[in-house]
Each structure stands twice: as structure tokens, then as C-alpha cells.
Image (tube, rainbow, N blue to C red; front, top):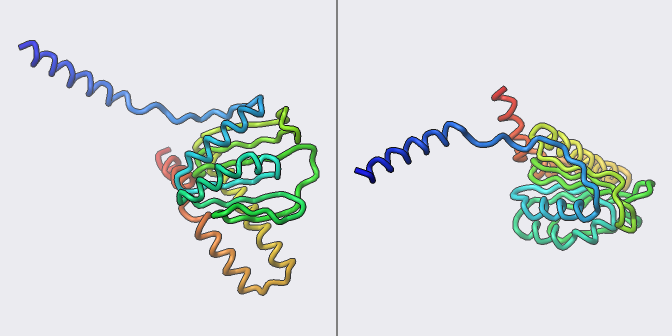
Length: 200
């Protein structure tokens, strides 16, 4: 009798909990105030990426994060890394790398986007002691938009470098198609954004 009463109460409780549903996704944009927070967030995004990782990065943060990036790429994640450095000769094993010159500003740039769902944008001092600006978010609308912007930026630099080195049009077209099929089609953040917009 007591057991059946508890079983009935359990079923009611389970039904009530199901009606509450899942909590809404975290949509805030948060400012990070320390270099430690920046690198901690970067490492977490890199290690938790499941299908795609997009990086736009200067040399100093690259050296700090390179091992984690390599490990993620070795785990089967598609990694597109746009590296700003002089000379333009950086490489990360297992990753698609686009090299370009370092921009002339007084800091080290770092953008990390995991699965087009979560992003970190930061600029820190070259001595890695202070943050100029840094934000992190999982906003389901902003993250895919930022992913598309940085992905297209990397592809544009690749095309411009190929044009500058005199590559034929067909080769440029094939390379752009290859990169788009790998990084531009069906990324999970954009698919999630599509689903979000269809529900509204």
C-alpha cells in the first residue's frame, strides 16, 4: 500500500518535472577581466569542440594553445586556423591553416569559436599580464553569425594569397569550394540558429 502510494507520487513528480522543461540556453555576453580567464575559456572551448573549431589568432596565444588545438584536430574535429604572424610560415598539424601578416595593433588577438555555438574574442597585452578587451558567449544567435564572419574572412585571405601568387582561376575556385564544403556547409551553430528561427 505504502509502496504503491510512493510509486504514484513518483510518477506525478516526474510528470511535473517534465512539464518544467529544460532551462533556456545561456544567452548572455560576458566580459572576461583576466588573462587567466581568457586562456581557461579558450582551452575549454577547444577541448569541448565536437565537429568544428575556428581560430583567428596571433603568435603568442597560439604558442600557449597550440598543443590543445593539435589534440582536438587529432580527435577528428575540423579545425580552421587563421594565423597572423611575421613571417607567414606557421603550421598546426592536422589543421587547415591560413597565414597572413600580423595586424599593427598593440596587443595579441585571439578568437576561438567551437561548433559555431560558443565564442571567445580577446585582445591581451604581449606580456600576457593584462586584458585589453575580452568577451565570451554561447548566445545562439550571435555565435553562428560570428562564426560565418570569421570563416569567410579566412577564406577571403586564402583566395587573396592565391591570387597574389598567380594561381589560375580554376585552382582558386576548387580551393574555395573545398574549404566551403569543409567549414561553411552545415556547421552545427548555423543549423541550431536555423532551428531557433523556425520556432519563433
